[in-house]
Length: 259
Ligand code: MLT
Image (tube, rainbow, N blue to C red; front, side, top):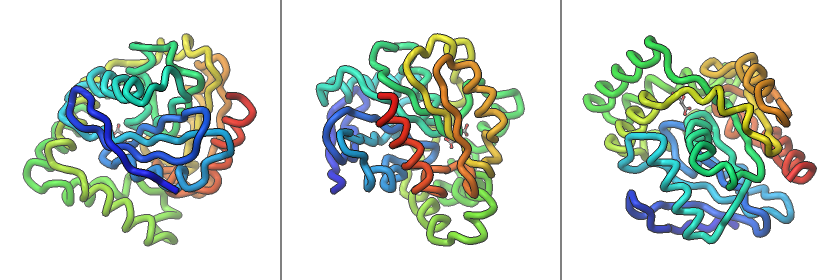
């Protein structure tokens, strides 16, 4: 059963979803979605683990501030350390958390993400999206992002997943989307931190991910001392939603063998 609750952090009440009991695994979601994108994983928690998916949508305009709130949420939940799993923007938050409190990491799962900061072209794209969200709200962002977020197979064969991702994006507020864009735009390069990740790590990538392709994921995993890299077939950038069973199995294998 998936439970929903809130803890109070500096940005206000922070909503989270939780399932299972035992060793904590904290899930950090992609932009511009919410904790709900992790429901497929929360519905299949391996024995002995407690899965917690946090909403990162808030007022903060820096990855450090978002990461500090995740730390506050863990304090409130009396969790000293956990395996931290971030997908795309969730990975950027995990990098910021790692710089602030590496001792909190029992394991690291990086899915469809990258350690590099934005390129000049990427920053220009963020500024254009900031304007788009101000003019057209979350629906306009969904129109622009859906073709990039989802792989060809999903867009061709899984209208249910396409509709669900649109629903999740459209549930986000204009304000929180704009704040997250600013945080991503200003994030630092995390490449040099990867060599200091000494806990077990799993790097996942959707085979059809057009935003952070598997070749980038493999390059990232080579920089992390104890990383295992897995490519998920027929999935794009939102690999946990597009290949939920394969994602959950790779995660469960990693957690049960290495954490
Ligand atoms: C995400 O999925 O979180 C975004 O694609 C990340 C980004 O735009 O860099």
